[in-house]
Amino acid sequence: MKILNRDKNQVTPMMNRIITATAVTLLIMALTVPVHGIGQSNARATAMAGAYTSLAQGYYCSSFNPANLGLPANQMRGLQLPGFGLSVKNNSFSLDDYNKYTGARLSEDDKQELLSKIPSEGLKFSADAEFNAIGIGIGNFAISYSVIGAAEINLGRDAMELLLNGNSFAEVIDLNDVYGEGYGLRSLNLSYGRLLYKNSDRQLSAGATVRYLKGFGYEEIIEADGQLVTLYTGFEGEGNLVSRTASGGTGYSLDLGAALQINQNYTVGATFFNFLSAVKWTEETEEHRYTFAFDTVTLANMTEDSMYTSTDETVAVNSFTSHLPSVIKVGLAKTKGKLLWAVDWEQGFKKAAGSSSNPRLSTGGEYRLVAFLPLRAGFGLGGKQGTTYAGGFGLDLSAFHLDLAVANYNAIIGSGGKGLNFAINGGIRF
Image (cartoon, rainbow, N blue to C red; front, top):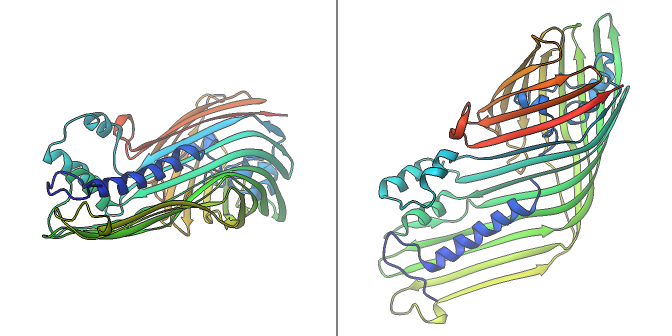
């Protein structure tokens, strides 16, 4: 096996194999795990950039704030019809970039322009999805069944630079920035809200959502490290990549919420998502391990097997437990009148599939010039999604409603965005 190439514009076959194996692993995670997904199918929330904590009513409270069920003004008897939402984004390239460079012969200027778009943390891809099969709201209670999933993968900037520019003398290529996680879950949700205090229009409530989770896919890169050093005499390097997978498991999660109706027009609320959570993966639990090592490989010794070693194996492992990311959201909303608006602040506690440790601020509005045709728009900054421009509309016929929404990441409209979010859902009130 050849592992040396002195042309700076070429990637060594060994490194190409390492990077390709890493990329394939990450792509498999993205393509085989249905792509935090909770609430993704709510088109009204999507159109308002996710600013929905204090606006959610009835069966929608399960995904945003169960405490809203304790406020009489937010209770709703009805049936939530099937809905779907999907969000896909990356942190570096737009559709315009894809159309410009795919299949093209890259000049040095093109390569530098592409690299300049990749932040120091590396090329990150994420996807979230939710299919809500059905939901029922009756007074203080809401029950729903959904399929949710999330995936996040990251390929380090050094690896991307090597793919574009090849190796050069005295260069250190670091593989430590590679990480990824993805999961798919079926979720049966039960929410309850209770009024704790009332003084005229001022009301305080608390609530909880309990989810029974049935996992059907999980993969996580649990270890990725290594370096390649280009020397005058040859190459030295070592590294390994370990991922953990499973095809089934069961678990639970618990959300806690509080809501305060300040008066008839304004409500403030807070939700602690996944206050407790655990999914025990028990089916087809495996580890996939790839390692490599080579010492001062040169043109003279590159064909000697003793100069390098590599292993590629899959082994069965014991059952293991994963946890859904914890997130806190706080929201203020104007809940009455032709013009409604909301502002939400969100804080996650770790970088993981479905969440970010970066804070997020989102705001949205809904205007009804015509009573049955609400128009919506939203804007968000920070968090996992980054800059978000959103919009949508609904058809509200009292007993029936249908909502559609689309959100663009990093661009108001068009192909300059770095991702897209689409959602559609409806329901029947009775």
